[in-house]
Length: 270
Image (cartoon, rainbow, N blue to C red; front, side, top):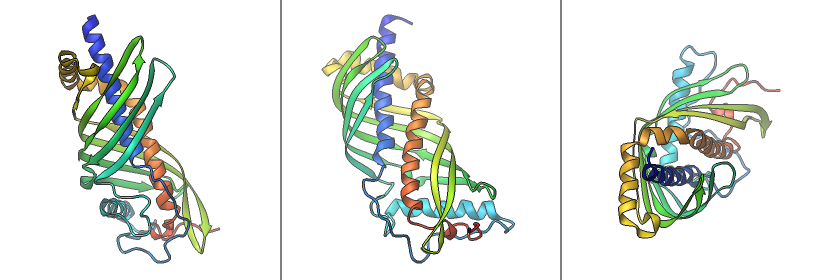
């Protein structure tokens, strides 16, 4: 790889990391409530382990939850909506290893999650963990960035607007839980998530890269769009961890308030 190509790849990689990290942080709620839902909401479909079509029922139930999150759930206003998702400012800090960055993104808007398709949701009747397959046809992120940092020995500084569009995203989320009782109901204590994913395409653009050096900015954007697959693969562990943190924060807030037995009626009780 030539020196010019390496500089372009390094800059592009950093900006992709910034945009992807913002997707994760934007949906973390900023407040919480402690009271559960006293009655089961209509949008939740209740299933039982002992029914023959339990997986289909559970998949439909989780889809109903996602659909409701598009418009927001009364009683969970602090979680907000998932389409659009908005955030005023995001900080990104990475100080270890070959990547060292200090960045912020502001006025971030994420759209596309209204089209989320829950393909399959399987709940274990032994440890009560679950595995969820989710498909997202297209997502778009737009925002303003400001950054200082380096990748390896390459110093990077810039500010401007960016947009980011992954397509054909398939996510497999594995969630571990403990059960506990409160107010006469069984609840999930969501303890961890593990995410794997694939995407079938990626388009993005970053404006005012390298403090307005237009030739390098155009070359960077062109190179990244032409070579999105190897760049995305290189960043996959970081992206997956970011998604895991987000989903964990959302589920902990939801299932701290909505009883698990609204979703699965025959969960065991102490």
